[in-house]
Length: 423
Ligand code: UD1
Image (cartoon, rainbow, N blue to C red):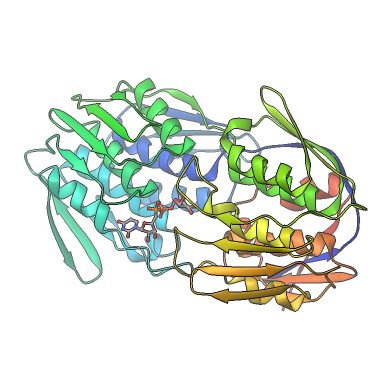
């Protein structure tokens, strides 16, 4: 297993171009199942997760052409060959479950393995399934598989989500594009990725209004066409690099991104004393590392609140801030696995339920640590970049799920970070 070695202490200077958004790309890949015409997705991030989704699409009969380094993925599925998504291809990544809705909408039936457990919490799919039932699907769970059928097609429905779910909102929206009549989604998630998926579906001929607000109206159509669509920039990647620069000091321009998509983070970075300048599609982060950051409290919330996917990174940053910061994790019940690893570097963190209390220390010291999930692993990179001495991070396959060319992007800005084959 590969490991990453970081010699901390270098400031970061330069420019980083932000890649396409993983969490949007995966759902757009699932959307390609909704049309029998060719689709082209550009700005596709080359990640373990997006490659993994390709494997599943191919199993279902999709022809995928994605030359390495092109960022351009062509898909075509004139006829769906299989409506079964097997356990082996679904268990590794939860977003693969999102092929259920498109298969059900296009073919009238689908059998998809339940996604496996996940380190950050139970993450059930009950809201997804309730939405499909409301749209007229019969659903049975048998042997770890969801068997869904709507042999006369899905019908539009009025669905009120009991709480906000990104996955369930997107999944219901995908399926509703081909349902008969109107679907209304209330208490819908408002993440930028939802708007991106809606915009792609609209370009494919879907009738969707209100994406990005809490109420989405979808008027079903009989078929969708292919299109060429550019994936939005990854706000979590942008926010992660913003935390890296805030941690090390220096000045870096984050280019080809959407500044508004990380407003919540930029606000707290400013409160902590980090310099933030912004333009149409860039943000410049600067910090004098001789001036300590101020501790700031964090409460994760659905968009436009502070994203749970940046909580670990911001905690890495706060480990050396002046004062005490309190982190409240409101989205996932078990998302502080980075805390014990950060403690190995000398951080002072106490976790009580969904709350973590971080008392800033003068400095971190390099140590051997282990990545536990995608966002947790990158918080260890942030901590390693500011720690004194050498940090090695094991199980870096977690990082490869969601960060494109992470080491190269940081090395270009002056970081001392390298990868080697581990034991
Ligand atoms: C997506 C993102 C993930 C991000 C999360 C919250 C992708 C691939 N992943 O995950 O990076 O951290 O949004 O912004 O886009 N829940 C249920 N029942 C359901 C669905 C969800 O109880 O049927 C719960 C979850 O366990 C969690 C909460 O609802 O506690 C929010 O989850 P959700 O917004 O659905 O997250 P994901 O779509 O899985």
